[in-house]
Image: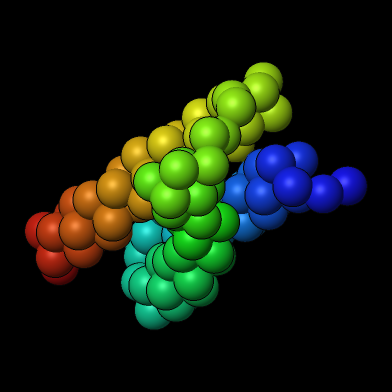
Length: 106
């Protein structure tokens, strides 16, 4: 495997792992385990960044004059990247909401 396939799979693997961590962070927040939730967000961000960097390499390639031909695999990778970004924002908001919720319970 090389070229576009490799980059696509790098994106998919990285953001897939990050998305799982964001989902786990939401669950931790629901259990009021904010330390765990915030650590998961931090770890997920590192994985998300790896996927984002792989995607950016394709943008730089095209900006340098080398066309990038989209494939179904690349479109799937980009879809996963965007879904992960949404999941990240939801996880961050859910932590805020559950912190407020916990403070109201006291």
